[in-house]
Structures are given as structure tokens and as C-alpha cells.
Image (cartoon, rainbow, N blue to C red; front, side, top):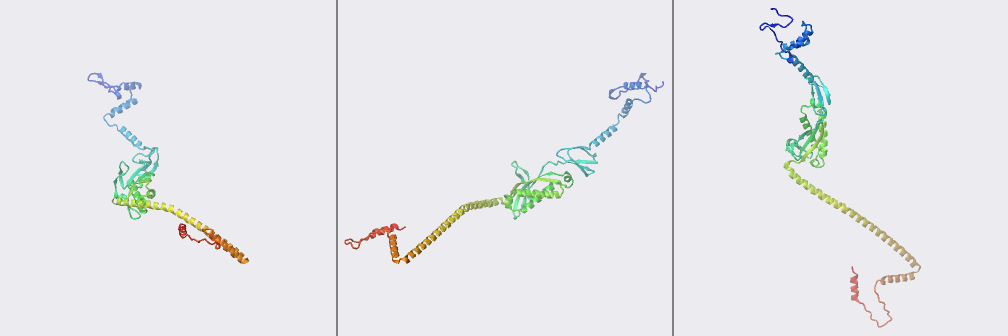
Length: 370
């Protein structure tokens, strides 16, 4: 019996038609039969469904290389899509060389490994601790690092300083490619700047009113160094945590400070006394000067008056010497006896015993003495 070239061969063992093999997704050969009927009873061409089924049947048991290749190609192309957040900058490099800087938003670059993108956070404020490590619950340094904290002042004293440097990235390109270790570079620049500022000032100034000056000068010097290095870093703040003499001499230094405080207090007391007594002395001196001036004017005026009166009397005396002499004599007696107790006795009257009370006169003289 010959096979039918247009149909399926018969099973010669049981003399029944062969069952068609189920197609994809559990479908049987009805779809193929319909396709053949539509094409005029099966010809040499076949429908797309027939071609797909033949390809699928032939690929069973073998890896889907086309799907794998297509998926890998899709993932490779998708690696060139990236997103930059609001606190980031995108630095695109092509085979390791800088190409461009991108800013927040969605961007595309050539897929890896042709181009890569770095996304450092440019708004984050980082901090470096110099002279100490870590802080306790009271915001005090917990572990000292003497090789960083001990510095020499301008008057050849040693001061123990702990400070913190706050910084951020201002240029991501320079930050990534110009410096190898940003933290170590910033630490070295800040520490050297602090040592330079401390070496230019006395310990008394540093421990008292000079903290703000030291912070601002250190920030300026460190920023200039980092700009010369093209580090792409901006120092936002330098904050002094502790400024003390070394622990070995801190008690002696505190004694000196207390003595200086006592000296300052006594100086202030003396200054207050001086400010009080000097105006009083100046006022008293001015008063004495004014009284002396008044006395001088009074004496001069009296002397001028006496001399004028004497000249007037002299003129009268020259006109009538006897009369003038008598008048002067009487005026003198009047001036003398007007202030003393006196008893007038007539010599022509007899029977009167002259009596001089010496005891009473002595007592009156004693009372008149100051």
C-alpha cells in the first residue's frame, strides 16, 4: 500500500489513522487541518501557524538562543539609561575619560562598558574630626589623638585643640579625578592650616577671645589649599570643640588664670577708686584756686583802698597839720577803746581809790584765747 503524499500516513499496524500530535498551548491538529482546508486541501506552502509550529517542534529540546541573545541585547542597551537625583551630579566617562556632567533628571549614555556614570552626592555635608575621635552623650570628645591635637603657639606654649571640619562637594568632576583620598586630603589641609594659625597667635589670645578669629582664618587657609589642589571640595565650617593647655599642666595653668583674674579684679577696684578720687581732687584744687584768686583780688582791692585813703589823709594833713593830727589821734583812740571795757576817772576828784582787777582780767584773757 502506497503512502498518500497529501495526507498523513496510516498506521499499518492497527489500520487506523494516526493521531495528530498536540500543538502549542494544548491545541491539537485541528488548526493545521483548518489551515490546509483554507489553502485548498494542503499544498507545498503552508500557513504562518504551520511554520511556527514546525519551528517550535524542531526547537524543542534545544536552548532558545534567539531569546537569550535578544534579552541580553535589551539589557545591555537598557544599561545606558540612568537617573540623577536632586542631591547628585552625574559624571559620565567614556572608557575612563571624562566626557560630561549631567544634572538631576533622566539621561542616557552609551551602554556599559563604553560609558559609565558616577553619581556623587553634592549637597551632603560631611564632617572630619581632628584631634579626637567620636563624641559622648554630652557632645564632648570621647577619645583623644595627641599627635593631631597638640600644637605650638606663637609664644612657644603648647595648646591642646580639638576641632571639626564640615565640607561638601562643589565640583564632582574634580572631586572624582583630581584627588585620590578626599578625606585624607581635607584632613591634612585643615590640620596644617590650623597649625599655621595657632603658630601666629599667643596662647592667651587663643584661649580667650580669639576662638572666632582662629576658626575663620583656618577655614580661609584650608579652602585656599584645596582650591590650589583643584579638589572640588568646599569647606562650610570649622568648629573648635576644645581649646585647653595640655593635661599635664592644666592645673598649674588654671592657678595662673585665677591669679590673673584676681589681678584684674584688683586692678578694676583701683581703677574705680582712681576714677572716684581724681575728680574730687580736681574739684577741690579748682575750689582752692578760685578761693585764692578771690583772696588775692580782695587783698589787692583793700590795699588799693588803704593807699587811696592814706593819700587822701596825706593831702588833708598837708593842708592842716594840727587839725589832722588831732583828728587821727581821736579816731585811733576811738578804734582802740571801742572794743575794751574802760573806766574813766577824773584826776580832779579826790577820794577815789584806783583799782585794777587783775584776776578778772586774767580770766577774760584766757577765755579770749582760742
